[in-house]
Each structure stands twice: as C-alpha cells, then as structure tokens.
Amino acid sequence: RSRKRAEIWALKSFRDRSSTRLEEEFVNNKEIILFELAQIGALPKRIKALLSKDKEIKEIAENGRKKAMEKHLWKHRAKELLEIISENG
Image 1 (cartoon, one colour):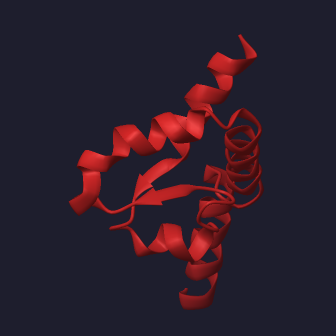
Image 2 (tube, rainbow, N blue to C red; image 1 turned 45 degrees about the horizontal axis):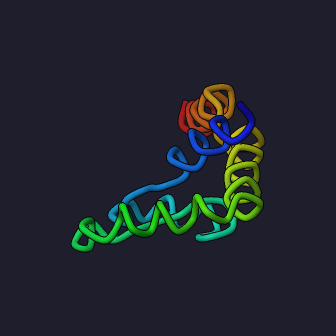
C-alpha cells in the first residue's frame, strides 16, 4: 500500500517543462521531476527507472508535497490577490 501511494505521488511529481513557473517555484529532481515534451517517448522508461528507486522517488514526492502545502494552496493565492487589490485600490 505504501509503495502504491509513493507511485501515485511520483506520477504527480512529473511535469512538462513548458511551464517556466514550475522551474521557478520547485527544484527539479528534488521537489519535482520535469521532462521535455519533445522527449515524451522516453518518459515511460524514465518513470520505470525512478520507480525502482523507491527511497529517492518517495523523497522527491514528499519534498514536492511539502512545498505545495507551504506555498501553493488556494489560501496563498487569495492572500496574494488581496495584497494586489489593496495596493491598487
């Protein structure tokens, strides 16, 4: 069960590099795993290789989850919007 949870988090940790915001907000291969869309054919092999490294993939997934919980919840976006509104209103 724990391995299945790690696999699900691992898959959530994979993202296309086309979003520069992700590269600004998360550390690649530490908090997220980014890939080039042009190399999507290599993705299954990369995922399989990472899933064989149980400890590493769990760590990346947990680091990404922690970062998201600390900085990327709707309450964080709402606070940013309220700050923008108060600065411009």
